[in-house]
Image (cartoon, rainbow, N blue to C red; front, side, top):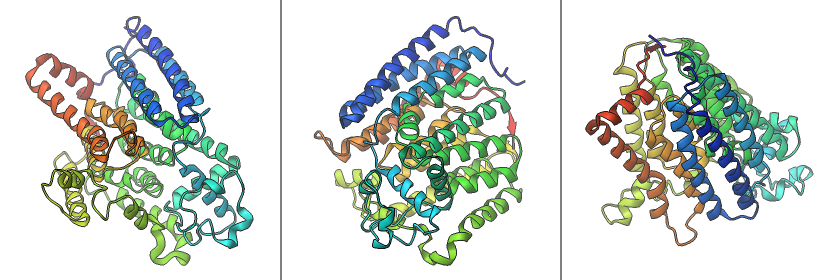
Length: 454
């Protein structure tokens, strides 16, 4: 039997905690915006982590006392407020959105961003003082963003020239994500107030709303795809994931947990939509369809190996010195093995949300992103499976902003971003085995006993 969509408001117990958390988060977000404005990354990271502590309390409150529509409206209103406060800060954490605006401008001029670097003299008429000076690697890097991302950039430019338009389109994507998460929860008969797990998380507030990262769009489409999957619409899932994958490539790794085994609709429609999105560029690109992505991976240390935290530690502790390509091959094999397990070690049409989360978290862990926004899609998955290790990983990702400043090295940053969440997972799983009370809590929060088919 399914749980009620929104448990009756035991919440005269939970609502005071929710309101207190909301007040504190608003204050912290306003202060963090000041830190961002003044370029105080260390203070900003501390404010984010403190936000995370209060956020954990809010998550616990909403999981224990889900509440009804009143609680849901409080959650949504505060989510909007946090984003409005964060958007008062300038783009001092990342310059990516300036590239988005530039690519959007090229799109409207029918100029391929895969063929021309921003510093190309033939594009001089498109330069301005607001966007062009802030574009990263403008002298030698063409775009790394796939075709669906380019369409979103064009939409942002259409909404409003400059950063304001790009922030607006990412906010629209966030609205879509929240609607899709609520729909997903409703489809599985879970309390809608669990959307707080995404809506109040500091990562989407800062990376999607404030800094306008395109990962907001990838998260929106993959969340819509998951909602379609739990409604047993495999073809629509394939189409939505095709768009998500051509915003950022990583959503493809989640499909193994969503595919109804041997159903042709999902893979056929997936590849058809991806091909259709690439068609406008193929005549110009040929092998350059990935843009600057290959060189970007080299710049981030993946070819040399140190960009992967596993290789960094093997070298740091003088255990081994494997090349980057060898680790990449092993990591790919591990992801493919997990994908095969997610497909074949379940019923043909069975949906196992913990496997969806495991695929996403394992991909992030093995690929070692160097920036917090790459963890953003995990915040959406956590709404369905809020494992403490997953929440720890997404919150701790802010330390990657410290970029070996203040005496910190990659040894410290990788430990906080990747080793600490792994330790939390180990401690939690051991506690579940040893403590009946923790086992009951784990079963209530992570395995509510719903059987969903694809």
